[in-house]
Length: 377
Image (tube, rainbow, N blue to C red; front, side, top):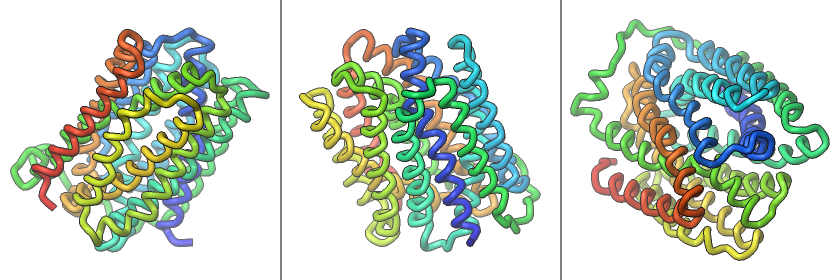
């Protein structure tokens, strides 16, 4: 088995654990702790805060030391977060757990992206990104599907503890990767990002902030929206979220290779702009079947766009400072949900779900226009 496949499989099993967690946590908070969407947004924003604050130094660590070892460390921290959720007594446990999750993801995100590029051929970056996220998304789908079947007989906390098994399998696969790259003698590189040659990275980071400000509401607002509007069970919610993520993953595998051939900006525009328009229709779905169809179409379009924008970022990175380049963009992306999750939750609590989805659509259209106008391919 090649190193690239090992990285894909590690992403797959991690996706199972985190996918199930994505369904379980918002319902756990809402049903057991009577948490409002605004408060839930504040709890989940702890993830983004820790992620954003640690991303730049974590990216430096990914360039300075073994990327594989950094990823293994991050997976161990993720396992600790699962333990905290499993033994939670009040909502403060979830704030702490989300902080650990943010730290874990900040340690792994940029080194994983950089390791992926190290293991890939230069003219196949978008294809490799599409495969990595595709494997992760398929695992995420399985996690969504099994969440309800775990919670129904076992309960919330016991189900979360079972997810540790998948996280341990993920650690095994990444630990088996042969990382022959020698750690670089480098210095912290913030000035490089702020300099003129990185104009594309700055623009992509800013648009990432704009998009994630609204997109992460699917982890809180959308889960509760499906439950409340359609009286859906956790199994039904898991199926809806699972099918949408399956579409997201498959589209990335299929279209990742085409982004390198037909043009990344073109593919990004087709996917992201169409998704933003469809978003306006979500509040008007009259049945859970119609919602499932529309929501799956939405994630299909986002799956077309995602490897294209990742390819644009990859093209703008330097080999020596690759983890830091990704880290600086990702830092801006993570400040989006830090501010956006509580704000979108507040809008949904006080103005209704419709207003939240309208705002999301408008913000996404703005991001598309910025990329098409200012990013050079």
